[in-house]
Amino acid sequence: MESKNKFWKGALVGALLTAFAGLVIVGMSMGIFLIGRTAIGDKGQAAESILAENQEEGLNIKRITNKVQMLQQVIDKYYLFDEDTDRVEDWIYKGMMAGLDDPYSTYYTADEYKRLQEDTKGEYCGIGVMVSQNRNTGIITVVKVFEGTPGEEAGMLPGDILYKVSDTEVTGMDLDLVVKDFIKGEEGTPVTITVLRQETSDYLDLTMNRRQIIVQTVEHEMLDDEIGYIAVSQFDGVTAGQFNDAIDDLEKQGMKKLVIDMRNNPGGVLDAVVSMLDYILPDDLAVENPDLARKEKNKTLIVYMADKNGEGEQYYASDGHEVDIPITVLVNGESASASEVFAGALQAYDKATLVGTKTFGKGIVQTLFPLDKGTAIKMTVAHYYTPIGFDLHGKGLEPEVEIELDEELKTKVRIEHEEDNQLQKALETLK
Image (cartoon, rainbow, N blue to C red; front, side):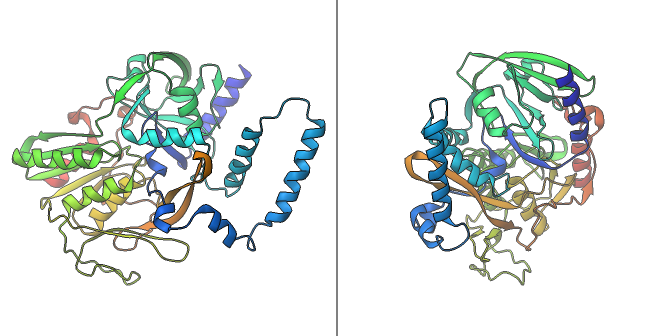
């Protein structure tokens, strides 16, 4: 009981804070921190050569090596139990990345890196919910429950706080670790998750069987008045194709206006959002940005990056396709990273009106650096900017039309269009 009381106090604090460490779809793509691409090949430089360049700068590698050797001698002589040297070595590297004090930079063991690569396929054995973690309290909260999944069938609701998975308290644990090693598992195996339902202050034990779930990241339909509606839950390898197909289908049905729903979208791989924006935007838009020397003068800039030296890639529209109709984009505080790239580019060119609440504000890029023995590090390497040079990191995008979702809707798994006040405002804005 004492443990639960302490947890509830933390939950009260967490309810007042809006700074999140990240959003993860349980078992799905880890979109909020995976914007970027593997960079060893891109930069043409192995980790060993990078190390050689920096041996005389920053950390005193020789002193650290000597100290590690001294610690190992003490361990060898006095440690009571058997030492798992592979685990110790992994945690040396994990500690080094943790010392950067950046929640988006981390070291992956060979097993973790293998699972990370598997996570971008849009298919997994899990429970079908999206969760977020508060950076200050470590509290993990359910953001979205997908319909027809074990999570929904067990009664989990948006707003539920994850207290335990099986017998393990998860508050403050690394979100990846909670998802990969506790919630995900073999198909058909049971998992019990204890949640704190904030509305009633009750602790509920929800038991469900993990199963294979294929996620349709894009859903679309035609609404009244020839208005198309497309909802994008995340950006992974299949999203761009699904999105472009949705556009084509709605155009065949006579779409004259469009609502794109990016609420609760944690982001994902950059190539997907670039492809989707390329499909919407014409190829020859100009924009005022005196701080940027553009590589393609007559092309539509989609997004660009800048590393610690002010250098980075620029992405342009080039497919010859555009969607020239009025557009509104729905966003909220869980619209992050790649979804902010999407909304920010359309906003910069006045191609869409943003409706909802201020977005998350993650405007930094992480890159995967593969290392030896199947390991890797993920590290923040650059800022990304909207075409007009806006750095949204820590700030987010401000909608032109601000409107909060009605309070009674925030814990519903499915919100009908007729009761969705934010969607109705987006439709009203178009009309």
